[in-house]
Length: 120
Length: 110
Image 1 (tube, rainbow over the protein chains, first blue to last red):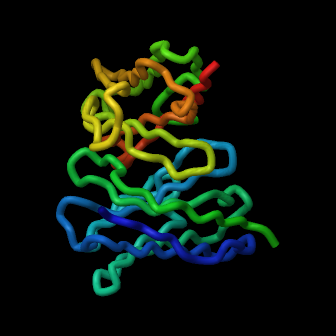
Image 2: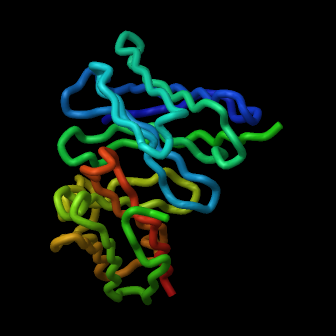
C-alpha cells in the first residue's frame, strides 16, 4: 500500500515560488505501473490537475499552468517535487501529491494534502 | 469552467438510488476511461470507480459506474448517511494531454 506525504511551506509571498515535495513510502517510485502527479483544490472549489512525471523524467503538464510549473523527481530519495513560479492569491489551495495509473490515469493513491496560502 | 460537466448537487433519502452524470466530449470521455472520486468533508479524495465501472478493493457494491459515448454516470444504490460527500468524475483528455476533472457534485442525504 503506497503512502504519500507532502512537505513544504504553508505560506508563500506573492510573486515568489511555491515549492512542495512528496515522499513516497510502501513502494518504489521507479515503477512502470504508476506516474506521479500534483492536484490542487482552492478553498471551497473543485480539483485541478497540475501535471505528472514518470520515474524516467518524462512529464505531462496542464497547458493552462505549464508556463509557471516545473515537476522533478529524485528516485534515490523516492521523492518528487512541484515548483510553481510567480504565485498570486489565486494559487492558494490544498495541494495533493498523487500516484496515477499509467494505464487509465486514475489517481490510485493520494497524499493527505498540504494547504498553501499565498499572502504577504 | 471544468472540461467535464457535472450537476452541482444531488440528494436522496436513505435507501434511495442517486445518479450523478458526467458529460464530456470526444477527446476525453469519448476515447478514454472515466474515473470517479469521493471526497468526504475535510479529507483527501478517494478513488471510487476506475476504468468506467471497476471498483477498487473495499468499495461497496452500492457504487457503480457506467459510460456511453461521451457521457458517464455514477450510481449510488441504497443511499446511506455516510455517502454524504462530494463526487468528482475525471478522464484523460487527448487534446489537452492531461487529466481533466468535473466540477464536482455534492450529494446530500435528506
